[in-house]
Image (tube, rainbow, N blue to C red; front, side, top):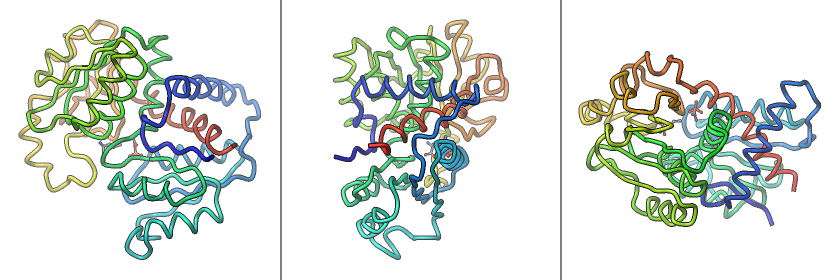
Amino acid sequence: MKKDLLSIRDLTREEFMEIIERGIERKRALKEGREDKPLKGKVLAMIFEKPSLRTRVTFEVGMYQLGGYAVYLAPQDIKLGVRESVPDVARNLSRWVDGIMARVFSHDTVVGLAENASVPVINGLCDLEHPCQILADFMTIYEHKKRFEGLTLAWVGDGNNVCHSLLLASGLMGVNMRVATPEGYEPKEEIVKVAKEYAERSGAEIEILHSPQDAVKDADIIYTDVWASMGQESEAEKRKRIFMNYQVNPELVKLAKPDYIFMHCLPAHRGEEVTDEVLDGPNSVVLDEAENRLHAQKALLVKLMSR
Ligand code: CP
Ligand code: NVA
């Protein structure tokens, strides 16, 4: 049976940890120049309905380094669901390639691809989640903090796709998570409910708040993301006003633990959700996160595609 990664919900605690550990091993192998090509001859199709720097480059470079190949399909190439239906695209691609990675607007699209493809489907970001980002982020947290349980992660900003995947992963792996959003921009109830169920098992605490100060107090990790995600460009000006007090700046980070780490999935809008001092400061690990997209995803690709 093929396995997909559409959501953090598709992974058990053991599988999640296995990807982090294999990601760390593959990072070491690459740095030491050791041969690591378990996907020789395998091909990944990469469907993009939205722009990307990190996701595109890390999946493409990752497949190359593992001995395989990646085919980039730009938004205008296949016009998913317009020129051809999602099920038909999935059925055709399954005859040629060994895996599909898709960055889409609607979560239903990755579900439709997965239901109709006979090869593994990976969610490379949708409106609901960004699971690959969060695998790389947890690998980064593990490298810097050497553990998950007992840490506190403060999310400041929009209750968006990245926030959703972080909530699920925090609950799963025992990280306490405090989310501070403006009213009306909280993460989806259905995700918070599952994250809290996971947290009950792992012993973590999940809190949805409105005060950035309350969220950040004594936190080990501060995480933020853009105020308007891809597809929400028309709301950008309105959101700038609503999120004004949710900026991660030197004054806010003073409330966290002195050895806190600052995280952002990137791209960042400097001077909006985060200031240069914090983004480029000594506690920022944003480039480690970006680097680890490559290594964590290589571990994921091998897990799903070498079956
Ligand atoms: N963080 C992230 O997914 O970056 P891209 O949008 O550039 O792929
Ligand atoms: N929340 C952002 C993440 C980009 C990687 C978006 O969806 O645009």
